[in-house]
Length: 120
Image (cartoon, rainbow, N blue to C red; front, side, top):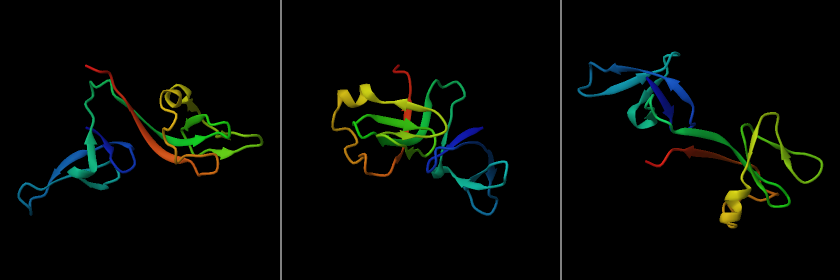
């Protein structure tokens, strides 16, 4: 079954292992035999339309917020860049100009997680 590691948002396949030495104690193993406890994982419904994006948020010198899929770096000029893709968050910041006020041009990028899900 698929699960998301809460601390990193990494998606992994796990199998359930029952510990015979402890009543009711369940563990989960990934393909590398890394052991996880129930409280470390969020299980993913295979029919879910929910998607989670993990990335790094940075604010350009002009105030625009972007989410990058890998750690960005400052480039000549007044903006952040990386080798992968990014998501421009202009609409979000215009709705709430004070959003993530701790993220500034001078600050390091902030690792974030965004979950997109249909409203039912």
